[in-house]
Length: 364
Image (cartoon, rainbow, N blue to C red; front, side):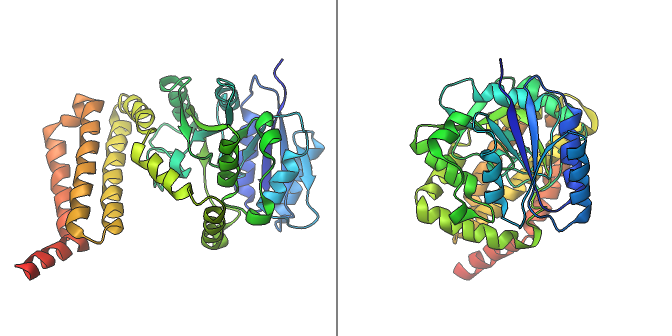
């Protein structure tokens, strides 16, 4: 018999987002028994307090309430300690789930004995983002969350990939892993950010893997509770993380260089493009946006303009080849020529191109 999984939802701000998150949990039945544990971290919003009280009175959530604001990590640790025999999912209050999301995440967690954490794809999940890391939109395309998640479940059924770290917006943790590694480090990361990275690195040292469930997509709004203090928290967390795990930057760089999630993303791209119409056009537009982001990133990373442009052009050529493989429709000459013209205009108008021209004239 499958044991109950605690879905832990820390709540601080954002009534509309919190309501959307919890209502999505109520709306989609799972084969896996679950208990929704909502933890009110001394929310300053009366609407949130009343909403959670009402759900608890109906027996729809197990409600914990902090007497004072403890911060994200201590609040999560309180939830982790609630039922010491259960797996857990840490779910941000600004997420939205669909279909049999938990069943698929649990199936992924138990496919191999050394899997400790599982993260799904999302629109806003750093290394686990779709359509690409750096995407700033909401749910991509025109299908909507539930149909898009079903597409992931179909084209990537049972597929997974190793990750250097989980992403904490939606993070399944097996209890055996928690028992071996311990809870999150509240002393270093009490307010939030970095705690899941530290946990996963400690778990890896103890023999546990973090993986992506490629057949699950969960929506994530992002930074609702932290909003104004996000940048400061991120800087502090990064410093604390690198102090404890100086190898972390290299691990992430190696992961980006290998790009193991790209085939999984492309599988979904192909299925979306097969829908035709506006959905196909949006897939193409997303690839164009990704190429533009690559050019900007690579240019910013290099102090030598020629090297930056050459490297960016190689990456763009690779993305062009991938776009062409999706379907012959991408080879439509008129649309391609039109887009090429627009792209050349953007490049020629960019400060980077003008600076390169200046350097060439100066050197001549």
